[in-house]
Image 1 (cartoon, rainbow, N blue to C red):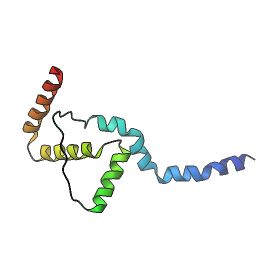
Image 2 (cartoon, one colour):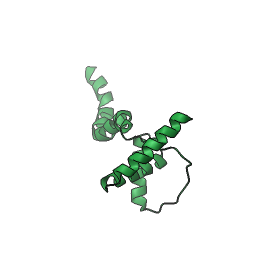
Image 3 (tube, helix red, strand yellow):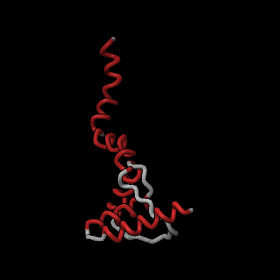
Amino acid sequence: MANTKSENYEDILKYIKENEDKLRIFLSADEKMKEYRYKISGKKSSRTIFMSEKLQFLMNEYCIENDLKIGEFVELAIIEHLNRCGCGDKLQKIIDNSKLKNMGE
């Protein structure tokens, strides 16, 4: 009878093991993403971005797994890219100005 109970869990355990990496990302998303949140105030506007369907699928999947909106994801990607290209000082001024405006409201 003990074998029957363990057999009931084999499928779910196998599934968990196969998806271990995705589960780790999903379960740790809050802690991981906190350090990447930037608060930039101001009027939001929309833009159309054309990209490969495969990249779009990956972006959507990542946003779902990490509880991000696509707009936040794109902002984060732009900020990270500009930081790597030496625009960190300009970005920091924008972020600091946004914080000052938010405190005054």
